[in-house]
Length: 145
Image 1: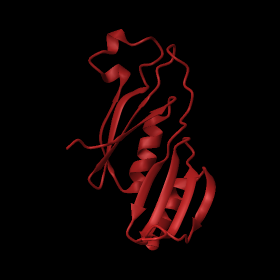
Image 2: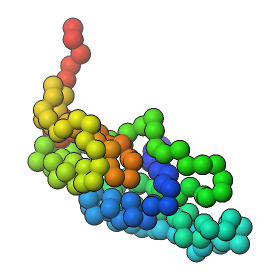
Image 3: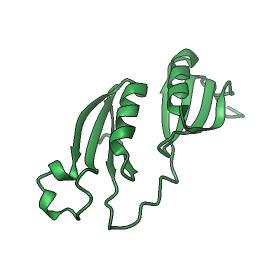
Image 4: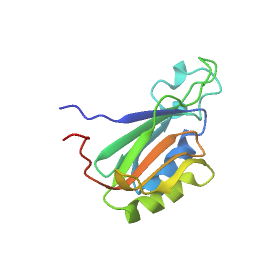
């Protein structure tokens, strides 16, 4: 069975974002290579040497991958049309992650109790990544069942 992982695109701040996620999410950066360090360095457009070609962060059995967009290619259009979701066993586990990811970002829904979770909140972090955080999911049955 394949493993589904997210791959995020940044505009020159991938290394900073991945170090932030490593700290807040408690993961470990397993790999981070700039364009200038890659075997393809001679084929990279000038000015892109310090941008991250590929980064990999291991998070409790999952992987978050990322890289920087190349300058001089298609313009970077930001992140849109998705959210990364983290679900924790309890509201107490979810709170520090929500607070950490929201540092310098924008909270779109404060962490609060809902009918499906003891805590649920949404935010966009300072790097433009949208997050949904759940803590203490509640077993909800559809109406009529």
